[in-house]
Image (cartoon, rainbow, N blue to C red):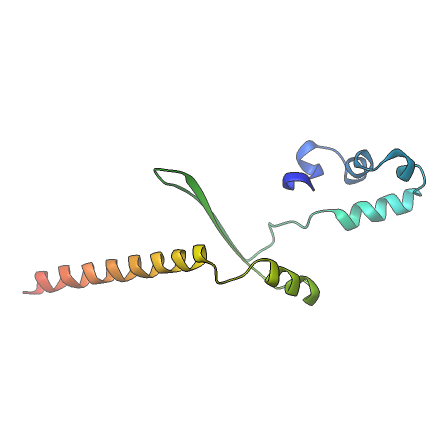
Length: 122
C-alpha cells in the first residue's frame, strides 16, 4: 500500500480498491472468487486489538516526534521476523541515544529527589 493508506480510509470496499490498482488486462482475467481472495489476503491487519497500545506525539522546539509502543502476541512468521531483524537493526545510533537519554533522565530525577529529600530531613 502506498504511504500506508488503505481502502477503509477512502470508504471503498477492499475488492474495489484492489481492482482499481490492477492493470485492466490482469483484472479482466480474474474470477470473482480469486478477486475476493486476493482482497482478503492483502487487507491490512487491524492494530486495535493489542493489549498495550500507547501512542504519543512529542512536540520539540525543532521538530515533532511520535513514540509508539504496541505490545501483543507475536503473529509474524519466523521468515518475516528474520527479514525484519536484518532490515531493522536493534542497536543503532538513534536507539542507543534514546535509551541513554531515558536512563540519564530517570537517574537525574532520582538523584534530584534524593538530594531534596536529604535537605528536608536535615
